[in-house]
Length: 583
Image (cartoon, rainbow, N blue to C red; front, side, top):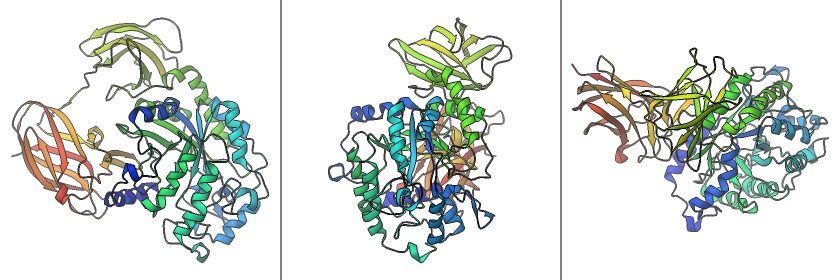
């Protein structure tokens, strides 16, 4: 990890210029897969909801410090950030002797936390293979005093404890094997070489090794598609045939979308409708171990992140960064124990659930399971109501029963104009998140609240409230982002719904960031406005720009939509659209 946001943006722009790989010609083993086949293959992953990410390698030796100086950024990027020469960085391997490594203990820690799968770095961007590789001597068996293959031990422990195993592999970036991608210009002549030779002689053979020598591998987690083309990616994706049924993510490149989206360090506001997805996140500020990074997330935040992600139909891949001695840091273990204690009670409200039928809930989140006669709604209450009366807004179904997941006994319910009201105990069973199980008749029917026009006649359409349509455009949040982005495909569009009470003519403005000026339309109430995005210099430099005047002629529920004009479209990031009554 982790300068992925910029590299994937560049890769997506490139992907738009590359013809799609035709199914009949594709090396992708899933090119001809039916929906039923895909659903069967993804079933265990969708039910798991919670996994452990492990970033472990030579970078745990410097642990964020080089020549007595603390190096900024994330731990596993220290070689790149500090521009450490290859020979000097490779000397760290002689100090990499994780004698305290206990694969069984690692797997038990994950299992007790409620995690169902593990994904470990088999090779990160520094090119150091954490396994016995014949394709490069720059590996833990040949280059370190440890002399053992930790992935074999981890694979055995996963089989023993019933945990699925996955491997992360940096297929493009490699800062030590000659020819490997470097994300930015190489800084050491020792890195020079043919990128195609690197792919052929190191990346492809190593992917085949990790998919051949460790028993069942359930996940292949590619990272950063730097310089990847369809031709370069083809032998890598073809290697997946060595593990029938394997799941892989969207970071290979070369026009191959993979099975899962991978939002990093944030929870998307609305998920990725139609796409499986998995948020990967650190417990502190780094993936690879840094001895002085003590900015730990609270157990409450981790639990609520898990609930939030599950409520949007995603998985949570939570990272640990072991030390050079092979130990998971104590603060990570402490937090995983607390998450595990919560999961022992609330696991049924996470495992095998699907996304919430509610657009928003003011007091928490919801997950659901469909049943033979209706559905089970799991209401995750973050903010226990002071009057012990919880309104489930907009729920129209008949309720057959309601109870606390943690305690026996029925909860009284009543139907009102606002939705279903639950009469709860006076105090919350769990101060972090308490779960109420509500059984309903039929599939969930929810009258989600519609945005209302302001009393002064203005309307503010925020990116976070947009409904996105298409394969790539999505709401971005985290790291200071709060906008629609990845708008590379001109057939993608966005919409908002509002109850208009004061129709008329409106001045339309928008907050937009774009590297090039493009054309789009704003449609509402059967009227259309054609507008041009400003050239702001970057996708993070937003400008408030006047788009023109748009008339909304009628009262009532109105949809406002933004459609690219294909002939003049350029990608843009959109933060908001504002309508002000025209004078």
